[in-house]
Length: 241
Image 1 (tube, one colour):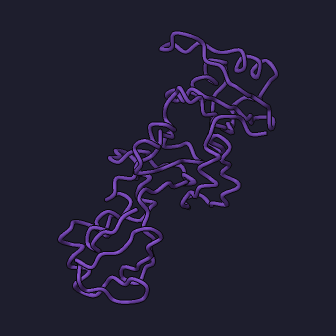
Image 2 (image 1 turned 60 degrees about the horizontal axis):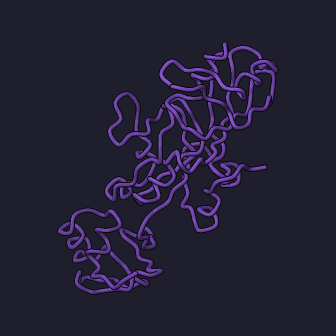
């Protein structure tokens, strides 16, 4: 961390242009340690810095790492076309600091979605070389059969893929529901694999990434939270038990 003038601190946290941040400060809308700071040149150590803007408390974060429980009918895009974007579920400061989804979930797919403004983190989480397992619960149109599970485990051929794609784990959860673990993250992969195996996916929810479980985060649909060091450490290779 470093020592920065207050206007640069606010700008880095997504509160607007440098000019707008200076106006906020000069208007007395920014408090640090309970004191109103009206000189935008006043510098502060950013490490563990807490401040408030318009009475709302914030903590300085060099980067943000966010988990969102994505509802249906939201697009994982900064420029959505047919549905609201997932960024509309977050404070507007995050869009201004270039927070973006890590990968994508279809508009009708729900569950665990990571978001960040850390390019290295996004690349690492998205890289197929990492083989990070992602766990989905799929609801099917027709009943799940042992043959369907065997097909998904042994691999199914998709028309635009050079080799069959297989699940790492596939278990029947209910008559028309199964748990499927993938590492590839191909376009519409779960839905296309089920279709290729002769069934149809009617609902899809991502419940885990690496060892990070959505259930453990306690988020209702549409809610989000910051990820701390403990949660980030779970975003590693290896399957959950």
